[in-house]
Image (cartoon, rainbow, N blue to C red):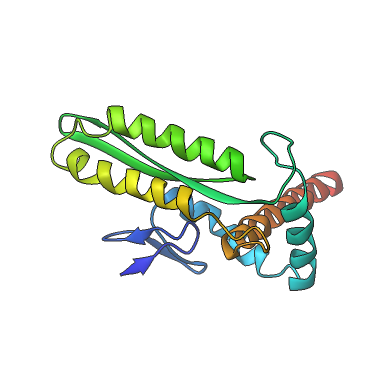
Length: 170
């Protein structure tokens, strides 16, 4: 099975392809342009920023780090309609736990109402949250996912700077 080059989701069928890779949907494909820019950023620059951010304050609560990516998983269902999502969040462990607990509670009450996917996905997403709560990222070093998120943020900033420079010279 293929995975989205932007978000890492599994692509069961369909998806979008272009010169930057394979993507699960148009939204990820549009963001895929950042992939090319992100690959141009020197690894030493990225590693420096990753270490600073990892040991810095939490962007959510401003508390002490370490900071990393914590993913919360939700399901919402209504009879024959079911929607599930996984949302990465850059934060400290405490904020990550709160987000995963809130997503689990949301899913517990609103996830199982759909047939058949609500009944299938609700225990899966709650299990994923519980797993994430029980085995967080290693606090002694940044995760690969955290590095990828920061690399993409740096690429977005670089593209904005280029656009601002291009706008001033026109």
